[in-house]
Length: 460
Image 1 (cartoon, helix red, strand yellow):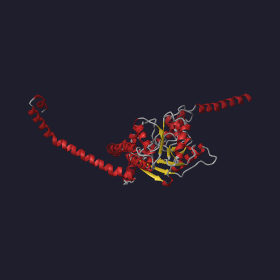
Image 2 (cartoon, rainbow, N blue to C red):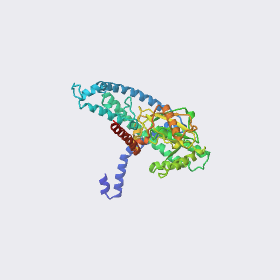
Image 3 (cartoon, helix red, strand yellow):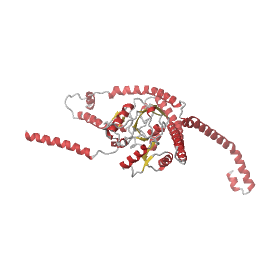
Image 4 (cartoon, helix red, strand yellow):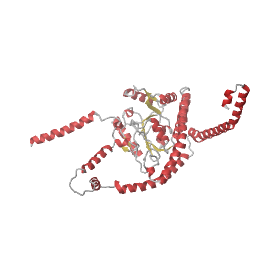
């Protein structure tokens, strides 16, 4: 047909060939268009009815709760296979005593005297103690008591049996074939609506109407983003929710902590000005609500930061500020040192404890290992994000209490409520090197020991 079209110069003949081709392909084109139209209509209807409308009114049909209960039963089935596998391994190796391990390293030698190979046991245990210290293990994924059918939790478990491998394979198809596309669609919907609607609200004059619309838009968009993660959140003690003129402080596990809290209440965010997509979102949000964004050069100016925070909380018409005083993400097992800056302002502090259930997905963001895109892909391809949020009673500085003591008291309350370990270490140790001051202190102590021992020998 194409040869006829290009070789015959008679206009009537060419028109005749083209019409014949169109009549031949028309039924297939119409069928494809009809199927695409039906698919788009069904998809948009489901999105509107089950996601957007419930997010607007803050209601839920209970589908996510039912999904979570089904996952728990699924994990119980897989746990039977894994427990049998663990029992076999424990019998063969992990329950060996000191004597048994030493004999194993000696390769069956029964000599009771000291052997040079014995030191390897103590060297290994010493290195394990150094590696598994209180700080380092807070920046790795939380260990699970049972496998959750994710290879990122344990790569080898799905090779235990054929049934477990089949179960894992079905899970991969569900997570990547159905859940991931749905969640990506919801994420783009939520972020897109947030940018567009906050920009529109920003055109309104300042007043009650603008504040009301801003609150509704933020809540709706954050709730859509929550559904993009299939997040099941349980909020406790809502009567203690943060109020205007105060600061909300919480432990920090993941960047989605912001969405978790903002889907139940409105906050003024604090952060550094970014470029790219994040910058577009920040500029749109600040038009509708007085968020606090700092330029890169302003972040290290503590007095400027404190002044802007103080000016914000002094206006009781403005939303409470949301701050994560740890300054970095911790792996959902502990709370580390709170920076004292937000506790020097002298306003009411509203503590919040956040605790994730690692069985359904690890929410911890190891920023030194994963970029933001890779991390979000992990979140959206997990089974779900399940967490509990506790609103603690408001706290204020006591008489004679400095900012550091106040920060430690708030941190202890959050750790106690969330069932987390209360640590005094600075989370900045995750990236920073040991300070020279600490090295010098150890050198001074060791030099005193050497000088003291030499003096004792001289006296004797």
